[in-house]
Length: 331
Ligand SMILES: C[S@@+](CC[C@H](N)C(=O)[O-])C[C@H]1O[C@@H](n2cnc3c(N)ncnc32)[C@H](O)[C@@H]1O
Image: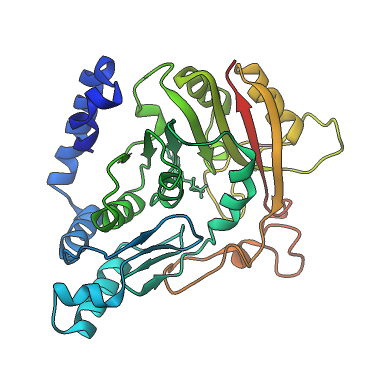
């Protein structure tokens, strides 16, 4: 977190320095006196040995760092060291996004996150030299993939501590200097208006009670000519249907799902919050080969959320998850 402050001159963040500093010192207070899960995650993070990986691969589906032999620099008992690294990484579960390979240990995450990456990367503006915001960045899988394209900087916002600590564990070894993450929700992020060239907002909008307010704030944070890449759950409909699904209670067992738009509604939301050149660049049904239970998550996964008699429906009887990706510009 503090790296953002240290680099404020280079990153041209001086204007909002007081707000960022107070935000980060509030978070620092929480993290310096952790209780409950944050305490467990802090111990796991601190127990991970200091090892310098002999190489890093960021431009392939599995983000890979180091080989098993790199561990020998930190420990003579390689098996004990592998077990130690694995058990500390397991303490940070559930690992939803990935996969990763650390010194030969594969973290087979719940999602095969490269499938989503491959759906948009060739359809968006090049990321080189851009200032990027990733809202809901989880453990940073996509931020690390972005790093391979030489952006000026990438900043992630991730309020769930398990995922934020996974990011810290990965950064401990990847040590990529222009990637940052803050453990805060988007609402707490200061209004650094006109700053970002590219904003990713993937898998977050349907969790918001007020999706339009969120889109408006995103629009204000962006530079003219900037691009938003937005991914959300959608519902299928006839061509011109301007409706939303608002689940009575849960959707696919998730408690915090509010508005699931049709493509037309999503396009109107983007238009009415100031975006132009709106394109739907992908529509994909979520399938069990992409989201499934592995040893790295203890919770349920997609097949548990669908009606076993009719997997076209969720257990609540709503249409099963379909996700769409949109690109939109600020002109
Ligand atoms: C469904 S996951 C998507 C993760 C990743 N963006 C992706 O597309 O795979 C949603 C993530 O957004 C985070 N999140 C939820 N509400 C948020 C908010 N208000 N601000 C920032 N992140 C949020 C969650 O903690 C979670 O990690």
